[in-house]
Structures are given as structure tokens and as C-alpha cells.
Length: 318
Image 1: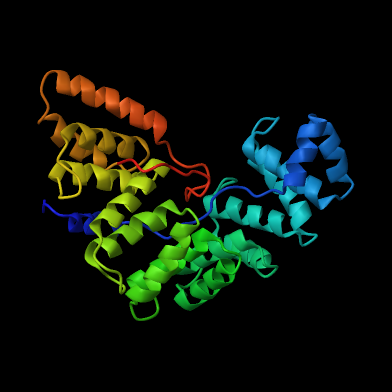
Image 2 (image 1 turned 30 degrees about the vertical axis):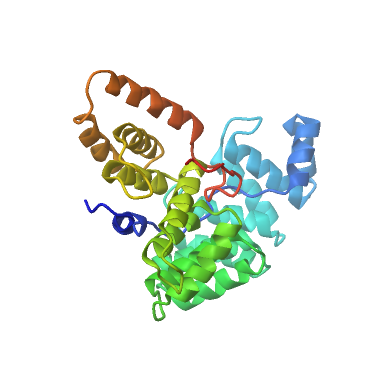
């Protein structure tokens, strides 16, 4: 491994466009459910045709909220609300079909329901539909449509949409690669708290891309904040940096082991092999200290709740 920050390039770019994969419900839906506490009241409202109640009931079944999880019943109530053109229910149906939670994945139907919700301006649907276009699931790859959908979602200051636009320009999907535009969108997403955007933007500062000055200190801070938010790719990157050592970050095998451990725990499986390499370099009490630090990091730097870390801010780790 090279002893400078540019080594993170091969790691940072191994990421995919972010997709929101959680059920959607309005605050009033959940307030009603919590206040009544019993599903019987919600069922009564849903049976009367209340679209919000139908969606909330679908959400309860889909997430096991106050009842046993049952995707078939969730689908039934989402369909009732979707038939009344209720965008949140259409979006949730898209999720069910995309993830195959009621059977096999059906990306064609996922596109259909995402499109219905997206046409009503439902931001999460615009993002998920755009991601299906990028990945060619449920139809042909269409980078133009994906970019248009992300642009619409970005008008609502959605950091996931902004990150996805940065991703499109970074890799030249359907257009010429444009580092300046990539920096623009990654920066906007990072300013809104996107952990994936912060991790990606670090590379641009480390190499002085997109008209940015070379600023490895800034790059390290971005990676550190992203890692603190729970982003496993950034956590793996920190493990690499501590393993090699840089002018900005002294070599530290204990820190390297700990960051590889939390990255592995949070889903970046490649970090497991790197952690094993570090283990062979540790001796005696160092091993116990490394394991203790790992447990602390796993506890403190768990994955974010909303997939892109905007719910979780961290202090500078350095």
C-alpha cells in the first residue's frame, strides 16, 4: 500500500448510488396509531376508506409495529390506499415489489408504483425510481431519466438525490465525466449531513479534483466524520490510513484494527481480511487493547438509521 491519502481512491469508488429502502408514513399516521394503541381503531378507520389509516395499518403490518409482521396484509392495505392515488402507499408498494417481501422481486411493478408516486412529487419515489433506471432493473438502463428524477428530488434539498447526482457526474453515467459537477453535488449533500457524500468528497480533496485545492487534512476530516456517522466504507478507509500512516495520521495498528472491525461489523466484509492482517502484527496486551477498542467503536459508531447518516452528527474524531 502507498503511504499517502490517495490510496483511498480504490476503496471509495466501490460504492453504489444510495437508495432509500424504508417504509414511508406520515407523522399523523403514527401519532394516530400511538394514541389509540390498539390496531382495532386503526382497522376501523382503514375499513372506512381513510387512506392515511390504510397506509398506517400497512406500515404496522410491514414493520411488526404493534402486531406480528405480515407483508401480505401490509400489501393489502397499501393497495387499498394506492387505489385512491395516495403517494406514500404507492411508494411502499414499490418497496414491497422491489425487495420481494411478498414473494419474488418484481422490478417492473416496483417501477410502476414508484412512477405513480414520483409523478405526484413524492421525493423518495423519485430517488428509488431513478436508482432502478441506473441499475436497469425492471426495464432498460436510462441515465437521462435517472438524472432528471434526481434533479427533481434535489429541489427539495434531499441529500440522497444530491449524492446520486454527484455519483452520476463522478462516473460519467450517460454524459461526460465532470469532476466540477460531481464536487458541486457531493458538497451540497455533505453540507446536509450525507455520510456517503462526505466519504466520496474526501477523494476530491485528497487529489485536488474538480477545481478543489489539495487538502488532505480536509479529506481526513470528511472521512472521519463519515466513519463516525456509521458509514462502513469510510470506516474501512480509516483502517487503511491508520495501517499505512500519513503525514496527517500517524501509523497506529490498534486504531487500524478497531476501524476494520467496526467496518466489518457494519457490513463491509472485505475489512475482515484486512483486520486479520493487522492481528498478525499485534502482540500480547496489544491484542486485548485492540479488541477492547473494537468493541467500543462497534458500540459508538453503529450504522445510521436513515441509510445516509443525516440523522447522526459527530464530533471530529481527531
